[in-house]
Image 1 (cartoon, one colour):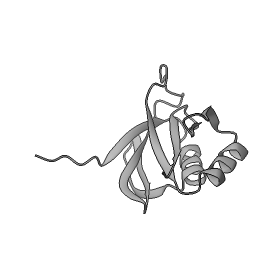
Image 2 (cartoon, one colour):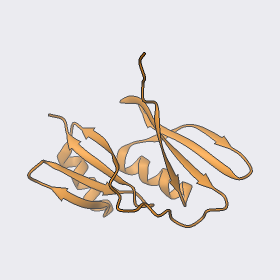
Image 3 (cartoon, rainbow, N blue to C red):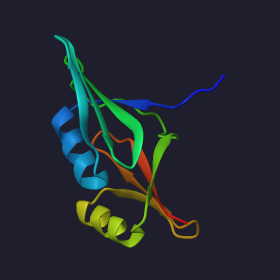
Image 4 (spheres, helix red, strand yellow):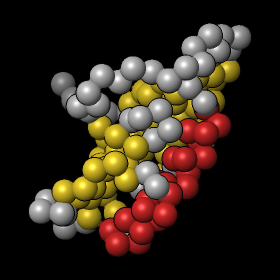
Length: 120
């Protein structure tokens, strides 16, 4: 039996702010959307992978989510680590750097951590 990962879900408090952040910071754009009376789900991705990030906005939950100690994250590999770091530095979204490991983390508008690693 084989299993293929297809998406990860993040609940967001401001859907448009999240869509804007993910497009600018990581080049992820809307793939498809499901809208209901009480929620909107937007799947975002890019041509580099068929894995998608599912952003869920709940109408009756406008406040940010409690993410605990943020001990989970998604990782993104980039071929141009220096340019990515410069962009994220300009955006002010770098929340942690580990130069010894050659990685850093950015934080989205809701506080989710995203690891950025160079192609090795």
